[in-house]
Length: 429
Ligand code: SF4
Ligand code: SF4
Image 1 (cartoon, rainbow, N blue to C red):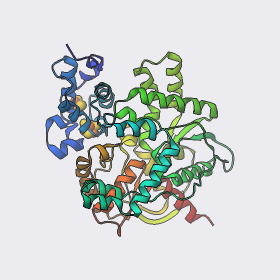
Image 2: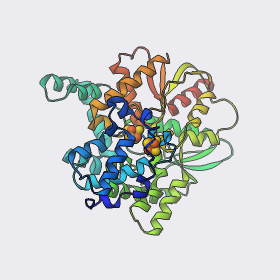
Image 3: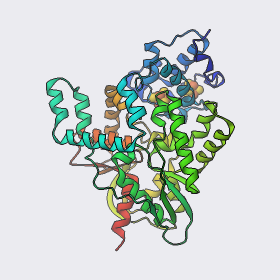
Image 4: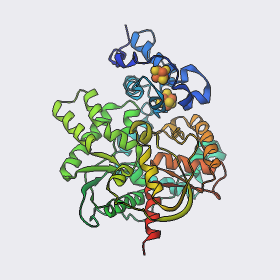
């Protein structure tokens, strides 16, 4: 008999794995360890054993499940179409309920999930506080006193400075004939740390012919909650976003964070899995159908021709949840290709995780650094001076990698929307 909760794992999906091993070379944690248990195939075998009742929910089992980055590279590599993340999230929900999820087991983690991420005011204050601590070099002092780990001090030192005065406006009028009414999804970390990227995204969309509104009442998408196994927390946040989007009357909900976008597109599935009433499932599915990544929306709306001008060498670090979950590989590349003067240097393994993976860099900093170090080798080999990303976590992680590898004089990390806005500004009188 499986332990309570494991009997609800999607057993039919577990059976779709044919154990071919095609996913192994794509898996960052398998690359780090060479261990079958740290591979997609091994994790699926462990989850099947749990569903069969031959493996209990032990801390060791939980460690293997949360050692996974949930980057979903295995899904792209899998010829059998195993829905790995769907199975993993069901497993993590059981572990969360048993108090075995590293993100929600501690009071600090619970506070961050329930009280910090959904509260923009509180999150902005926390970001300003962290930036002030950085200016005073408190993480380094804490490291010398032995109360902050060296790796945490290193991560903290690479965080961006606090954002300046907020430029994001409530709405942006479409330039030329209106092609679409867009609600801009602002999220949590993206909004607190990179609000200017939202302004850049809105200006680009407006330039492409969208009327853009920053809708009130929206909140964190719930992706971090869902990945931590807190499905109820994710559903609660999703309901607030659905209500806010419906009230906006917009045609599309556009986001500029790969992780948020995958979550928004997955609301329909989330509500079905959570057994929400049919009416809520329909509303969730409608929001999912209207969701677009900013690069996807821009590629759709931008008129023919170039998008500005920029003389630079760039390389693109794919957001895992953009490329593997949303299957958006060509949209950001197509946009970069339309910038006059921009030289795009494709990176080896651009679609391989950078180690950020939501809060993985905080819960597993040493493992995250190992993945990051491999990534930075590939980034540096391109010779680019700008590494472009499409997700706040990747942006923060790339900043850490650049600092960790002493590349600050050679390169910087930039969100693709900021890069496009800069290119546009350069080309315009
Ligand atoms: S590639 Fe797919 S089917 Fe093959 S072992 Fe990996 S998860 Fe299983
Ligand atoms: S989601 Fe990523 S880290 Fe997890 S098993 Fe798949 S490839 Fe490996």
